[in-house]
Image 1 (cartoon, rainbow over the protein chains, first blue to last red):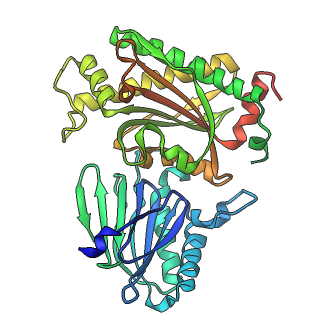
Image 2 (tube, each protein chain N blue to C red):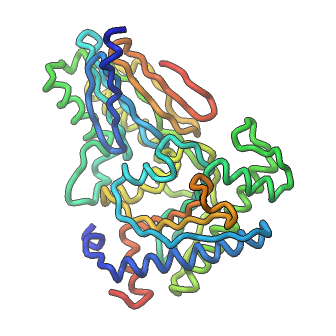
Image 3 (cartoon, rainbow over the protein chains, first blue to last red):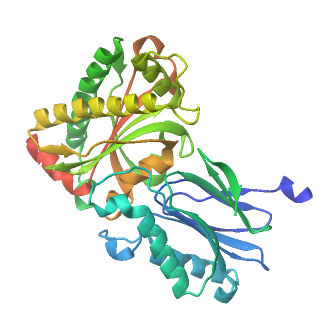
Length: 167
Length: 210
């Protein structure tokens, strides 16, 4: 209980990434079609979270690239950030949540399927880096707020309609 | 992105006028539907980061009733009509004549959902047809979708298209409220019009501003 006095929640915004060490936790709110990717090292009790909006940095048409926005560059950037803290990639494990389809449309436009596309892209990038997905809560049509505790390696997921669960 | 950086106060006035005309027509429709006086605030046009956008209406986690549609044609973009639960309950209770209807009670009654869907159709329709008449631009809206969920999860859909080009969004934000309870902040309905970055040029051109 002594630890909990100094416990802080690191907040990660949309298209942002950050890392956290125990006893702190890391959190992102209001994930819709976006995907929250948590990478963690169980032994070092360090975790990182990236809030991804788009599947592929090839979609970018901006002059400056915010790497945390895309699945491919976001996961790479998070791995690099964790390496600075002395985490080795082969020790990393992943938990992911999000990728919902908030509105049902019959439109052919790809934007409407962005949730599932984000999830696919995240899985592809994790596989490329040989990072196993330990747990996931993806798809559906509910928004999610997620919080990861590196001490227990549990991901707390809150939705409006289905309450709270841990994976 | 280049276009967004060159926006002047004249451009902002044009966008405010669009919000003004759209929301005024929607407020009139709503007033007729509810047989109640509906008022509106002066439109706000803001260029904000995605995170600041998520902080509207009480923050990313606030549960709201959201109507969303895409517009296509001479102007592409996303449009939202966002109601705090308390306000949505008041409107729908009045529309379906059921004082017990509540968006917080699951499962939400079908008749209430369908009334909300219809309310979304009517209001977004009057907003967009006023906009189209005013600018002479062709605007084709999709059928609106309805979701009762976290504000962040809903509004982020409108940021997807923009996020390919930019990390900022220009939002035309107009709020409406019942005149007799205007002092209560939590019962404001918000129209958010988020034109895609490429569409600003056609909006400005249509009104003779280059």
